[in-house]
Length: 261
Image (cartoon, rainbow, N blue to C red; front, side, top):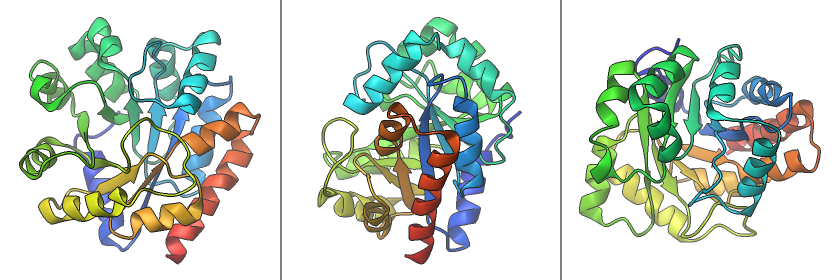
């Protein structure tokens, strides 16, 4: 079972020790050995791991994550099977699930939060649940000890950014660019601007995601933030047949680049 506050405490401790945070993503249910990918990420130096729970009608995912989610759904993945599998993962670092509020609502907020925490999940990202609509969900998450991570975009105005950071738990997820997730050849200039804005209004770990495809891009995105989420580029390799060991090596390359600065 995840300890209440574990996600934030874990990331703060690593950040305060001078480490840039690395949060790789894995689509739950994508392949029978997907849990081995999660373990490989942890062994390669991930500071936390984001696990996607596939949904048939995503609003934020780009083509690669959509393709990965569709493949996982075709293979029989669902919320219940993914949470059940996570019970036995024991990765040694916090797990954060990312999904859409429709799935959580139909499972029942109280039930989902309790079952997620019992499976070792420390946090959740619900990109289609606006801050203003947290009212029904948030009490159940907090009662269970499940951190609700908020996302901030380059268009978030200053007053809302401060409030959003106050409401976020575990870490705040900075969106590098406008649009959907996916690999990019270059990072948007808005990434650095948003990272600086986040660091100016909160001491919560600020982790940047969207469009980070190479270790070099990860280093640039982390220069003014506390770390990065790496997702689509890993799922493209997974869809192309990468094994858990190969994906672990890929994450290790990101880890080495971040450590070298």
